Length: 395
Image (cartoon, rainbow, N blue to C red):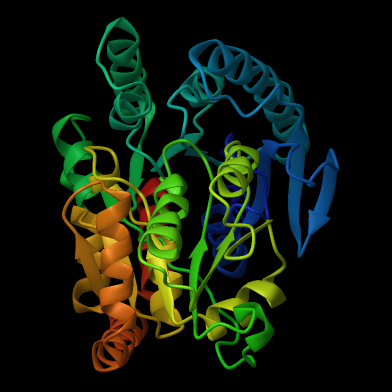
């Protein structure tokens, strides 16, 4: 390379940095490895500065129409995002002359703005956060012309990519099979939270005087299944008379207001808190206080391929957890979770009380999860794979 310090430009459409933890951790790891790092992302969720430098990383943000939930909304969202990315990529190219374009899906449309730079010799890395065809099918419940359009976009992105980064082995298998990638060009960089301090003090006021605190951490969209937790709370509180459990559901997203309305409709205002997006200080104290974590992502072909951040965060804090029985969820948590075999709020609620009422199982699950997270699933291992992917891309 002609430059002593290779430059990488990371493009992400569905979340801003530093809110997108995976992208931000990758950015910081690449910076620490000696790269100049530029990130292009949307202006949203209180991150609205169009241009700033954060911890030595140049961030450019573009306007986006909305966070879509329907097909027409996705069309507006993606068109506005692609236009913003096109403009900011040109600005980044003029200022930084990046050597690598690192494309983070969803959607699998970023090849459209990346293709011109491929002609200049820029290397393309395709970072598969979500398997988009399966995600599309899970959102809309069917296959059709648009599903196959999404499959085509996925193939096109693989076609332009020099190296692929997968979040887990399931995604790696798709990249090699459906994407036609050579196994030597696909690297598994697992998502793993960096928790600076798991020794924070618990905040028992979060329990609201109840014996147990059950928590959720994550996005609240129509594919995340948080409604199952609210309905499970209804089943436990009003169906079984369990007034000893407090629920704390942390996170934001397009379904947050609907979930608050559902909570109030079901008469759960005293039992279920939905504070929205919280600070790291609040989050860590809550994770320390929780007796049980819940992962409510429903069973479907898309979620079977996903590694959920929340699962690993519960493990980092040695918390037992309950989740629907997903392939990659079971791989991550192992014996640290209780698995629910069907998408049912009542079954989820029964698993919650069964686990809480067995303190020996809770202690064992929390301990095993903590050990597994720190020995097998920590971010330091993923950084080595990320560096190997970049070494491959740079030749």
